[in-house]
Length: 312
Ligand SMILES: C[S@@+](CC[C@H](N)C(=O)[O-])C[C@H]1O[C@@H](n2cnc3c(N)ncnc32)[C@H](O)[C@@H]1O
Image (tube, protein in one colour):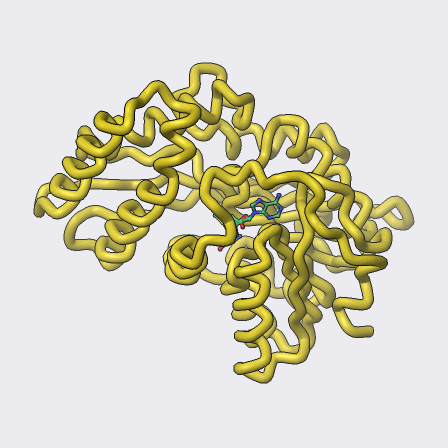
């Protein structure tokens, strides 16, 4: 079965995206192409949290909010036996990802436009592993619960759900920290986070509980950090990422943060200068949370060989 056969119909986005950046922007597409490498490296690889046996048992994979497809394409190339499907709300990114699959001759990966905040157009138990990385910027409290419920439906017993989100960026650049503060506060004001004080993203810390509430078991939490401090391997990419991401987030901040355009422009300019300093320190703390859908048929022997369940 081709991976795309799992889709029962196309699901065109019916509502405007809540994403904090214009998802059709070419600049955002190219930012995410680079950010993908940064994240996969910081996470220690494509599936660093899974045991070798778990990886071997995975055949069908869904990547939610796949962006330009970097993770899904790399997974399909590394594991030819897997069938990978990625979806995103952005037609621009899906066009790019599809072209990349063609150029690299990857026939075991496909991409489609779909809205993660709506019911997903796949049949029950279509995937062994569902991945979603850094999707917090278009989710709200209710969408997290409904998306996790959809993932439960799409997984067979023993299937794995893997969610990975950033909690907070901590930097010694006062301007960068102030801009991030405005961003977190705006998300909290819009109830797009679980943070009670609006001082961080407030999503990763709650993911384990959300998975548990939905019925997932053997929940693993694996922290990672993206160190974009001066002199680190990730410094240049991190500075560029902050430069582009904040420029593209400007319309969102002007609309939803307590910040005038002049204040934003002054902070942005200072941030760029401060990040060039040899003293610059900037770290983003993030968490990957994996949960296993329990096997109702035979405890301890899931359909997908799920080591996490064996640990019960
Ligand atoms: C920060 S990017 C993460 C991309 C990818 N997961 C990665 O790790 O490289 C967030 C992605 O969510 C997509 N997005 C925004 N709103 C969405 C929605 N409602 N449904 C699906 N994807 C959405 C954006 O287009 C963007 O590609």
